[in-house]
Image (cartoon, one colour):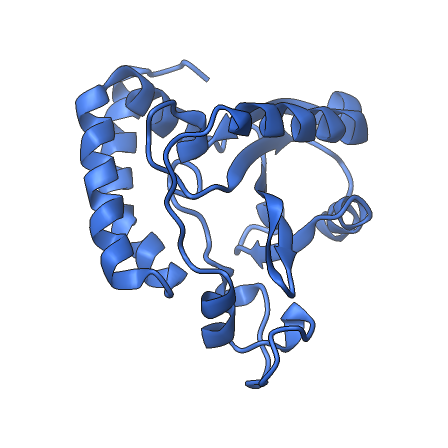
Length: 210
């Protein structure tokens, strides 16, 4: 999971004509070349992921200050024991009064790249650790949302509290990986029904938790 309910894919992140060298800037690579350069990878849980989150969260808190309504570690790396892509997801709920482009510009100065926009200009997906040579040692996804737009927290908590559901989710990910190692859009789409159903149940059970 990209974190709770799956958010936008990387398709809008970059585009361009096919090129022959993966050392070119990411903006010049075709979608097929991106999937080849950044395949789906699934790894056993690594306790270092929490430390990665803590370090990056500290930097974001310094950057946003009092505008941080809530900052959370989400996604499979936040669930001990769960097979995960080695990409740490952060959910930043902020009421920052700056316009979205100013937020993007400010984050870009700290190494974040805009990955996707939604119809809501204040919902932004950014990443860090995608390089022309492939994944960096530490890779992050940042989801910037309005306060309360936090389905990912409910999905995470349900997995933490329900090992059987966690095992079912891992089975879904293994099955999709076998078919879509080099198609992140399809891999993400294949998880959506499972995530949506679990999140709906979690929202009802944990009503008012966040």
